[in-house]
Image: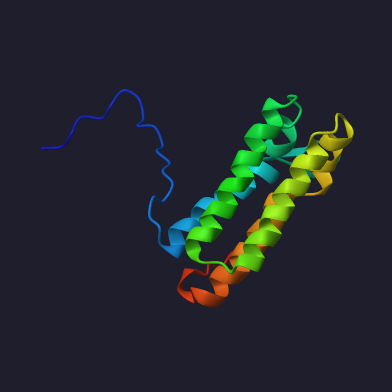
Length: 140
């Protein structure tokens, strides 16, 4: 016997991979970077903007939140076993972004140019692609 059709469609469920394996870490970090740096595009200018630039407009709290999210990427990299010099470079990117972001107006504009999370994603993906090639994703 067929099941009756529900009155409304079931909501789309989206869940991040919860594992500690490199493929799950890759998926989480790519999604977080996209959210922070390239969530949507400014119409007319065609420039990608993310939550990092928007949340950064809120004095102090915005900088604390975006620094914590950037630090999470570094933490995930540490758990994957990146060398200390790469972790130091990633941490420097986050700290520089935080320091510049703390300057009113100038820091908000700098968030659009200096994308520490994108830089850190590139460092992390280079490591994952070299040491865990089975996690590579072919984007089309």
